[in-house]
Length: 183
Image 1: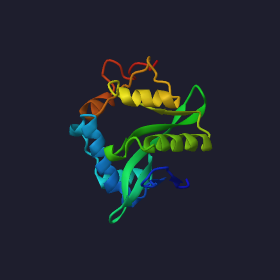
Image 2 (image 1 turned 60 degrees about the vertical axis):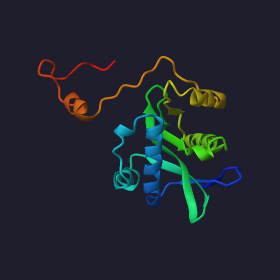
Image 3 (image 1 turned 90 degrees about the vertical axis):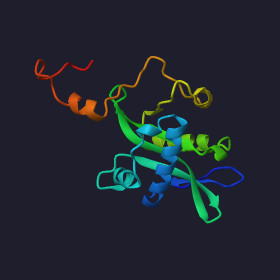
């Protein structure tokens, strides 16, 4: 992936994240969690993020946006994504887990540039879809995504099992050894 310049007064640059970016990305994740009023759920550390982005079996990737700062380049935005698969299309897809731009850099085109960068990456990798989720109360983001051409899927809901519930979920109940069939 080649670094891409983003038009702005501060000349941001998009580039693949490196291990050195993990502390900055974790800081941005914490800011995102505060914005979403979910900071109580954040347990990620730079070490755990580094393991999953750059360890022996990476499961995700990240792109960062940096601007010139007083002491060198400063990471002001990130997008973390991974490959998924569509059984209907029979093709891989790109799933954007999180995208965050610091408030001082919003409105500069940085969010759009990150989305377009990932869209181009999805096309380059032969993906049939580029998908992400948005909170239903985030009307500004919904309008922004729709303006860019995204469809907000009204009939789909995210299902999640985590923590102790995941541990219990992973064990079949005695009454149903195989558990119910997924529809």
